[in-house]
Figure (cartoon, rainbow, N blue to C red):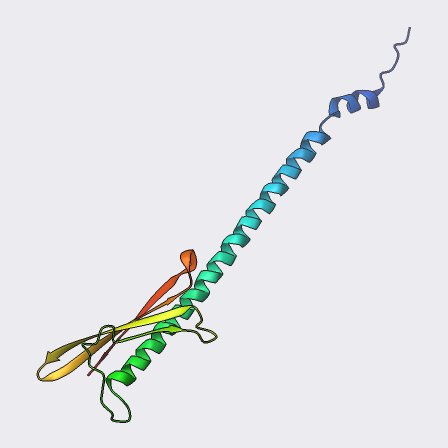
Length: 143
């Protein structure tokens, strides 16, 4: 006469069976993608820092080269100056700490304006090897 009552717990449990495994796989996959992208970002960041260091070193190499070339062109002690026609005007490969594996080359151009000589010194510094090689140029004009 009376119907047997349904076991509601059994019905609810069978409807939810198997949902945990796909959800766990989804979460693991998303976390793996996040970790892989963070690793790639860290790798790119470390490569750019190495290039930035070589870039700064190349700039300081070029700056040092143009300062030495200025002393050769207009000696502070009044000695004989180097001719601007010398090619290259100044060139050096550094072996000191801080500029190791860097080099500089300076060229000099002169023009005559209203019986005044104007000199342009263009110093190019290089640092690093291969893909990490950096080049910076400093230009100075003096009368």
